[in-house]
Length: 440
Length: 157
Image (tube, rainbow over all chains, first blue to last red; front, side):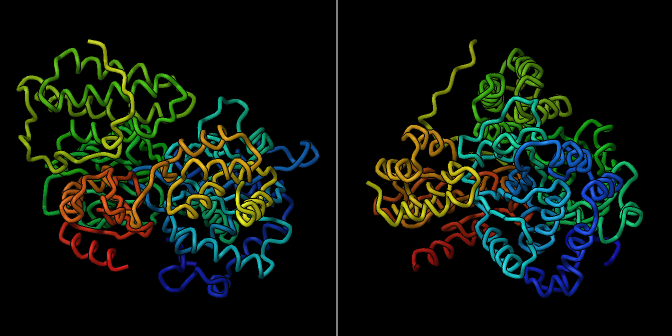
């Protein structure tokens, strides 16, 4: 196994959607080795590898595993749930993992099942991913028929279009057959998750990273990445960049290397204006932050989050008010409506930003945008409310002059020439949605 | 009453889960496939019957998720992603091109019932933007110049 890759290893050379091809590069041998280990020892191995969740929160997988009570300390079954509901704007890596290395992902699920002694794995895949579902379904059936599963049953569950279902407790609600609305916590899923039974829920890439840990061993795995977060991550690179795409690299790769070496720089020779380092929900970076290493702790120290390691490059043709408005319309559309701050805050922000972009905003409106962001933060059951204000709040903080210019000049300074001028959003189609007015 | 084969198929779905209620999303998908891509009131009732839950519970689920259509849709479905990464590389121009080619704005179905055109986000194809999804298959990237060909190809099916 080349040391550079741990998730997409071998996919360039072989058709790893086929079981025989995957086996030819020692596929499912990590599972055999894991099954020969006592569950507690397996959990210790994963803990020692310091594998942090790749879905957004960066929570150590080993700790999650150890929170699931073993059979003698629980009543009834435990479950493994794989979160394949990738829908963070900017992220498209789980899709590639499922399409190109489905067996490695399944192998990770089965290793996790052994660790918590679960006999059911549920894979919740977003509804839009039809091609990926078909590849994964075929791989699962092939592995099942070959007897790879042993006593474990693997069920694929298709979503039906809801960003919120990528949030773990909303996903569990959805998987149980309800509206995908988050649950109050505690209890956390390892204690009471699916059907209120102990549940390990991890993202696709996290699970697909597990076989390499077993295969390479903790020491070799830890040679990759940084000490606080070993291993590789698949960075999704998109926006105004010459070579967008997924790049699996060691954690801690700098933005500069990702964008300028792997991505061949800003498209059409334009100037870099902003970088969103972890999917649309995280605070934005400016070009002076290009040397920030993309690992969990470094990005957080620099004032943002690695999130799903989805990097969106924005060049100087984009109006930041328009970008904020477009991002916020997404969160307004995807807010499940359960918590008032998120439900109403996103609506207020959209209205205020529309007013500012139209050149009709007052100083009070801009102050209110900042105020709403402050008041929504940390006030909802899940992180969607936070996401909805991290983006807008940071755009205002970092590009205050541009927002101010809209107010002072009574018009968008781009004068109709912004690259995202007039881009419509799905929420613009729902004219029947009642919307509370921001009181004047 | 729901058709016997539908009930049987839903029953098979229910058996895959420790608690049958989990099959409600799959049952709705199935019902939608059987009703030309949307869920008329009788389809929701059939799902409630087959799932053995109250109709209101089915409606609660059906109204939550974007992919359940509660109004009739065209024989073809054209979806354009306009979230950040697609927006930055010309999604607006792609939307305009489809609007011109199809003769309807996003959010509408053509009068002949052939095509429903709508906006989606985020499709998860940000690195291959702009992303267009035709009849559930991703077509990425699709630029404004590609649109006439995409529509022609689709209409021929």
